[in-house]
Every structure is written in structure tokens, then in C-alpha cells.
Length: 130
Picture 1 (tube, rainbow, N blue to C red):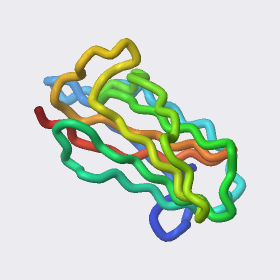
Picture 2 (picture 1 turned 120 degrees about the horizontal axis):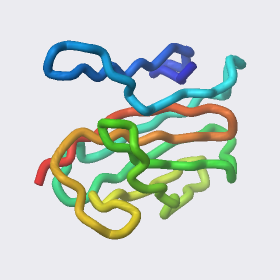
Picture 3 (picture 1 turned 180 degrees about the horizontal axis):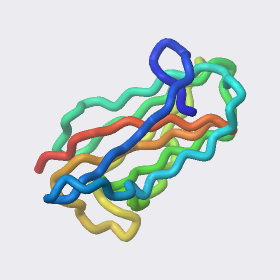
């Protein structure tokens, strides 16, 4: 399950198809527990972006256990992002500069950011345009 806008739980399915329309595995798996977590909001600005994107998660009551990761369209981990700022109101911010973990530039495309807070995970997409 994933946390949807408004705080309700739902399922996230990423469907990939080949040139013949056959379904392919996405590479992104979700293993969150079914218990309803405390709600949190996520956003990415600007989106689409061409140099960097600020990813934010607002977590009520704050927590130290926040992880932000970037994935490509095939579900491969591109890079884990460390929050660059934590505000008193529970807002965690990280910036992705369009580079992978080795510092190499990533190509134009759709990328997914996954935010994990404790046992709760939510995923959304950004468009990187050079």
C-alpha cells in the first residue's frame, strides 16, 4: 500500500510494456505493511526541471527515519538523497541535481522519487528535461 493525497491508502502499479504491447516487470517493488501510517505530504518543484529539483516531505510530528531515493523508469536505484534541511514543522527537503551516485549526468526522462518514513513509503515522478 502507498499513501495517496488526502491520507488514504492505495496501491501503486507501474506498468511497462515493450514495443509489441507485452507487459514487462517494472523493477519497483513495494513491501510496506498494511497498517495505516501517519499521513505525510510530498512534492517536487519545479516539475519538469532541467538543472535540479527540490523534493519535500512534510511529516507530522517529525522523525529521524526519513529516506529519499531516486529511481529511473526501469526501477533501478539512481541515487539515495540525504535531506539537506529539516525544518521545525517536520518538513524534510532534498535536492536532486540530475546525477547518479557516481556524479554522472542522467539523460532526459521520467524519474521516480521514493520517500520512506518509518514503515511507510510513497512514490511520485519527476520529468528531467535537458
